[in-house]
Length: 527
Image (cartoon, rainbow, N blue to C red):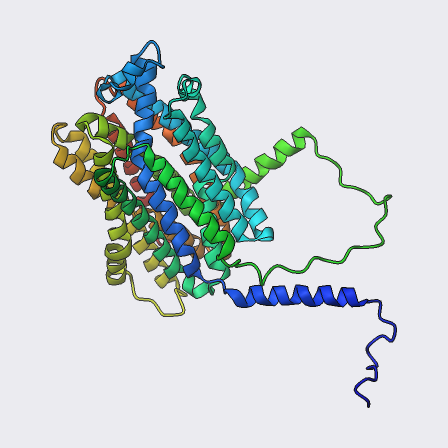
């Protein structure tokens, strides 16, 4: 057959013109170049996680100062625009201003968490279709918007500073609509899951979580060194944070490979049979929209309902998952003591922004050490030895469940003890406050232990396939807990700051103790 002769499968009359062939070849060349350029890998996400958390760590202390400044202007001066009073803000230590500052902080956290819990699902679903890069960009834009609002309320524009207590709430609205940290953490895990096999994810997830704490620990030290070596004020750190995150946007847009590129399918051909007479989807009424939202919010939590277990002719109710869900909720609520703890330390010991930053950094370093070094050693030494294929027999499942339960109980008990020691120690002892705070930071194994315990409980019931649903339900619990917990601790602190400000530590210890007691009711063997 001649080389120029047409093949039997090739149509003799092709409807493709030379321009179409040229466009197709150019599109294929561009796609090939993009695919050959960089390959998605979990290590691409490490700079993003590190820089975002360094920027967060740098501005944690200045944000506390902004809350105090706004509260002092509102409470201590009849005219919030009085420039003379602005120079006396650092001396404002009255209980009323501390209570006002904690309420401002609680309002910001509550608004952000409520909006984040509503927008996280939408951004996550959109990222599954459009890719991960755009969601990374959206999250960072939300972080930058928050920093810009802090710059405006701490500036010299009288129209804004006069209304700073209300204007600062724009920041959490913008960041919450962009998903906040919940969307950022979700897209980080999704990106890693896209380009790693199932067996390697646990190790890389642990490493990335350790990098989060490393970044948070580095941030305050970088801020302190810059303020010592230069004339930068605490509010200048917001500008530096914005610059770092804009550089991240450039990195993502120009260099960061899309992990879903190989999974995104070409768009389906248009159906030429569709006409204008085709039925169109009916618009939902407001009542139907509200009902759909309520079902989407509540349905994941139904996994915590008690399960009926049948053994031979007998049956009983298994409350392991229910007890775990309540314990997890109480634990997450108790973690809201940390932001108020920063206010307590700054106001009790008259720390400036640099000293407060060092204190925060020390706590994050303690968490990083525990997560990256101490906890893995404890797990490798005490975890029961099971076959490489996993726990199959009821005895091995019971051993794993008992180990996870004890690890969670130990972490939460140590956390409760640290809060209790802060409550009973002398207020004048700054060293004991720092030491017990570090002791509390060495309990970061509680969260992963509770997640692991939930998975083992489901596995013991024969519902191991519902693990993904369980983690989704825990995410809903976390969003709800983070929405209400700042208000609980802010109200407690504002009502007790003039009499016994350590009440917040008693509340946290009580919540953790209750969670430990609930975990003790989880049974490794049902029969």
